[in-house]
Length: 106
Image (tube, rainbow, N blue to C red; front, side, top):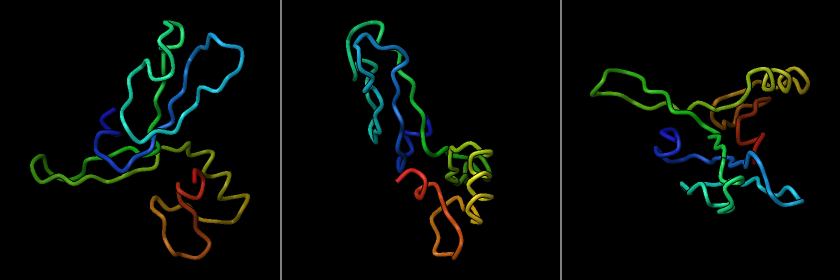
């Protein structure tokens, strides 16, 4: 949750088990939500939250800076690079033949 509290993040919120017939328990969120956000049935209250960015602290303890790192599977990103002939960048750039997290998730 620490990576979400710093701001500028979007999360994927998934329900582990469901009690209903259809599965529509996947949400994109930009706010902190309670575990009963989807349902108050005990079986559906086990939720998983995945940030699209992780925050890495760099520098000294009191003079630290935060670096935003995409929370993507490296093998997945490499496969996109190979298949499309593009280079992955951690932030969106105007560089030709590159792509970033936003290009995958937006």
